Length: 416
Image 1 (cartoon, rainbow, N blue to C red):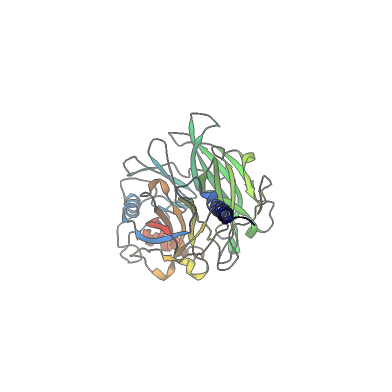
Image 2: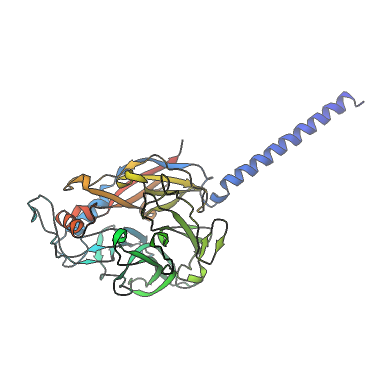
């Protein structure tokens, strides 16, 4: 029989091995949970919007810029708000459908006390507004910035990045993702999705040099299943992850993700699409979020990294999606996405002609203008709900505050 000393030694060895095994298992579990967030500050943990507050600064800046009558034919309102910080410190703001012309003082032609624009005011499909280094909005680029690709087709700019002109080049350009749409009827009164494109803009003069097609969707017979990429983009570990959505007409749409090596957004052959298990070049992605009901995204959404966690912000699914913003979180762009978290109501214009007739949509993050760790500047667009011919145009003409970006500052924190 072993001596008491030998037995004690064996027990200590077994205990030490058990402790070592437990530590190894714990490390493996921690690595598995936080591996996708190693490039961030801290591990991947559940995160959501903890609080929010209206940001009157930028909301007011765009209102003043649009109202300024000293300029003749520039931006007075638009939606599809995206931004990109340029190397010289300026910010390029990109908009989809845009009203030009001038804004008039109240009362308006309808006898209401709102600033207004004439019903004959020109509207273009996209525009660019330059913010100077001081933070002042300075100029509207010649509009439309991106010309129509064909009759009855147009381009809406979405996410943008500053990249080398070619891999390894010291010269930089701006790559702008574009949604190409064509005139439609029925549920596609805002256009039928056609393709995802990438435009190249020169620096510093922001001149459009070229446009290339990344993913053509004309061969997909059902417009509801066509996917456009570029609503938002996130950089990580040498890749740019580009998110997109289908054009389903339900309460909640599906989200998808593709990626390209950093600096190569303008190379269609460099793109890869998540098919549910791997990245493939075929352009047949599978959704990473969306069940057609309670879980899903709006027509446009945004994704940011907060530490090691990815946070997706979208209008809430269902009827609450008309004014309420919610979020999901994940440890990787491909998910799994957890949520939705508790939603908050987006502040609407105080002087709206009929608040029940308005809707908020297209929440977009602007990290380059955000206030630091855990703080996020978010814009959203406001429009009139009734999309019947002429109705929305009349409403946003008689009250210009209905068709301009509004801003809130979010605080992201650990979800409890």
